[in-house]
Length: 485
Image 1 (cartoon, rainbow, N blue to C red):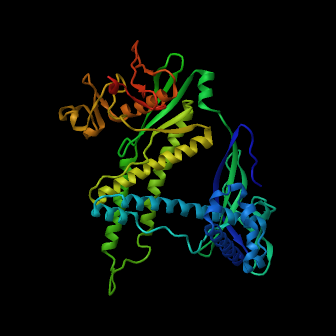
Image 2 (cartoon, rainbow, N blue to C red):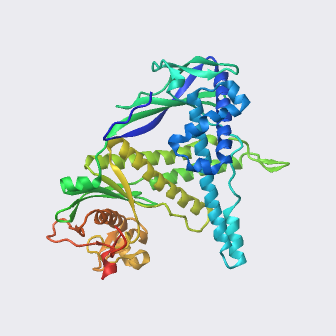
Image 3 (cartoon, one colour):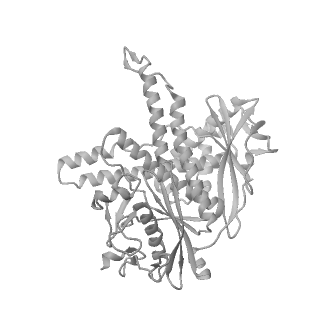
């Protein structure tokens, strides 16, 4: 039974995997085939009249499309239950919306290519746009089982309604899964028939008390505490600062630091496993009459280890960030918006490593956002990364970065590389990661508070305004103080 929403709470949905045993697995396969036929029928109905589909709200989809199944003789004769029909409508709506969004994006690319003045650029953009997206000819979705399709759940067994090919029958299914986390309850589930194996994925739900709007929190307590995170492509992969700002005085103080390593170890182990894969391929005869054809599932365990390394790093780092934010009673976790990051041109291996680093950084943000909200009701936001790396977080001046710092200053740092250093206008050498993390938090607080925020260093009587609001008409956009000088 789905969990009902409560006022002042937001609902959290997660999933857990279970292994399944049943005496009639062929009925699961038949039900899944029938469900996907039903999905494709509704896809054809929705795509045939896109204007009607796009103008119909998600709450009205059942009223518009549910009874149209009577026009299909095979599906009508199967007497598909209402819950399964509605699940198919939801799946079909997602398929059509995804296709329409991709089609609109493709049309914009084609129109942009037509506006180019030179033939070379028109050809390049048209080739880059690719072929138009098309609707799928078939689907292979798992059976989405709503509450009316199953009963008698004991924790180890349940009874689910399945299609036998002629009629609908309730069949007993045994399953095993891990214990539910605290305060979670079971909702609906998906039944999957894949490669002659059965899987069951439970949707577990929990109502978490909302802490309300941040604006109301600032008015009530007069302060806001944030954890600002700067994600790097090498070690330390995470540099964080716990900052607290006060509304009445607009003073921001630094309370704690955070540094997490792990990226270099990931690259080391990844290269190690890739070397083993290359050695195994060199010892395998892949030359045939048709050319070079490596055998299927060659070094599959090693490839799986590489994937698990990245997953382990993401889960470990995201867990550490969330727990540190909770230990310091932070209201918000602030990241840079890394959506438009793209790797530079270079050799295949270097470009591939950078792409994986970008993927890891974006995935860390996504997992932190999910875990922080689900576990501790902590919000996650993103700010524009402009000028956060070249602004002095102590005095508000413009810093020198990279080779501008000077090679003679490298002996001050154990880490090699000028990209990890910034040089302030008064000649001080700072860590670029800590400087950027501090600026990320200050930039968010400057946009949140009405007065310009003043960052105060520990032990100093006065502070400095690092970020200022944009001139009138730009909304809550902040710019560095040195750009206004």
